[in-house]
Image (cartoon, rainbow, N blue to C red; front, side, top):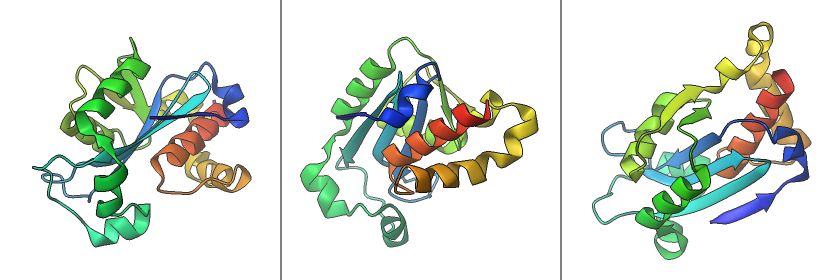
Amino acid sequence: MIVHMNAHLDTCLNLPPILDFEASSLNTFWSYPISVGLVLGGRSYYWEIAPKPEWTDWSDSSEKIHGLSLSHLKENGQPATEVCQQLQEVIGTHRIIYSDQPSWESLWAKVLGLKNLEFRDVRSLIDPRRESALIKTISRFFKLVDLQPHNAKDDAIAIALAVNHLM
């Protein structure tokens, strides 16, 4: 686990947990999580996940998007069971987790082994009059804070900053 203290996240201390996964592909039956980013309590957390032996799905086109190779994950990723345990420890008593794609995040959370969590759309945290600005605001924070799209940590940070800005 990598913990980042990001000065930009100081404004997000009171946000609920915001999570983002990157995955082996967008195959709903075989894909698995390869990295996870979490923003909670003004900090960001990041894990790269070594695939379990039974996780064999891989998409070269997804790799081009997220930039993590299968060999890198096998060599440098943490075992999925360790990531699951550490993630549960960081999440603590929170049972509601927010993301911009709750159905996908919920799927990959279950594949990872996370239990008893409910995933909700971050749009429910935003002032409804400003909800249509979410995508543009996320994009703006990627540029303002020099974040890399499709990196789970950076995605979670950009989403948290945008939500905080639009609340």
